[in-house]
Image (tube, rainbow, N blue to C red; front, side):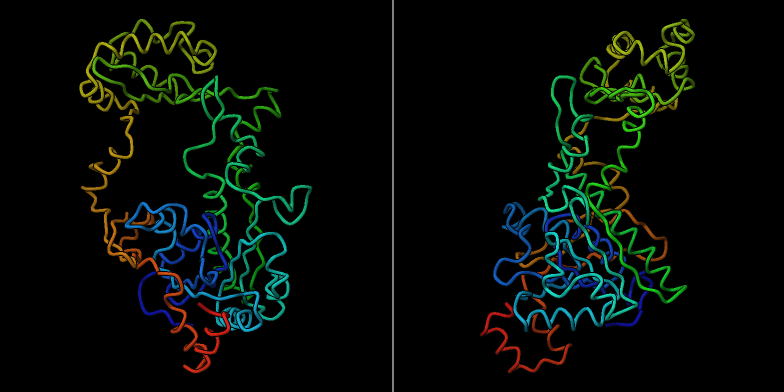
Amino acid sequence: MGQPNSDLPLDGITVVALEQAVAAPLATRHLADMGARVIKIERVGEGDFARHYDRAVHGQASHFVWLNRSKESIAVDVKSESGRQIVLDLVARADVFLQNLAPDAAARLGLGAEELREKFPQLIVIDMSGYGSAGPRRERKAYDMLVQAETGMISVTGTPETATKTGIPVSDIAAGMYALTSILSALFRRERTGKGALVEVSMFDSTVEWLGHPMYMKMYAGKQIPRVGLGHAAIVPYDSYPTADGEILIGVQNDRGWRALMVDVFEREDLVDHPRFSTNIVRVENRGEVDELVGSLTRLYSTADLDQRLADAGVPAAALNDMAGLLEHPQLEKRARWRSVGTENGPIDAVLPPMTYSDVEMRMGDVPALGQQTDSLLAELGRTGDQIADLRRDGSIG
């Protein structure tokens, strides 16, 4: 539906997304960041249900404005014959079709992956789901918290007393990023071979991939890794430690780091080769004693002084920020990461995507209102003004 005309890497690529919530919209938003034209198909009247999670951003939902900028919205009743034909006409001109509806819903609408690939051999089709296309949980609803529980993510997250889910939807985000990677690699393969692709990405599989360390610990060492709060199950010292006026995070990755911490920061060379502290393996075995020792030393310094000493010694450390601290973070300000993005309720601030090209800035387009581009997209497909009015009257479009 377009030809490349800029240095954005995906300019000229068209994506049609029958998407909702977080996982699929994250993948397509990054495609839009990189220049792809993303056409978001939404329900008439309601739209993507993530539009209604909250009203935090000028009356709009925080998830939605995060995940849907730089897209075009068309409001279509995909269950109607006219609406389904509109989607097929859009897909016929697209490079990628992505959907994360309930299991088999796309197939029932005549938008199943095999059917689309038969019609459009060069099309890249991404089917996103909770648990995949087979298996005993195939039909189950799969929200982020549920997948975190099923995979065991929650069992390794939290404090020793309380298992928790993560504060952000990591199963959704993992699936979104693997969908993004799949699309980019499929586009690259098509460039070489002319072949389209059918790729399945599930939240369950994506989260399992991220659990490699605790999974192998159980498989081969017979150990369920413990929940250690801010700490690390396999590395010590790696936690938050008290200072004279607050706290600081310290992460020592290896025995060279332990030496630097003891000698260059705390001037305690006598502790470097202590039999209970000399290697990471014994430090993990003596976690409580190590953490108590390090805490007794960090208390001797103010947070600012200790942070500088750690930096000078090359020992990894960080402030324990909240969201207010993030918004005021000098890394964002000094590197000019903030931009203004348009929405139907006025401009909002947004952070540049993390893909920083040296020669072109990623797109930071508007967040669309529900169905904002419906008429213009239908006109591109050859529908006349009278036909568009008829479609709107019979409820096929919004």
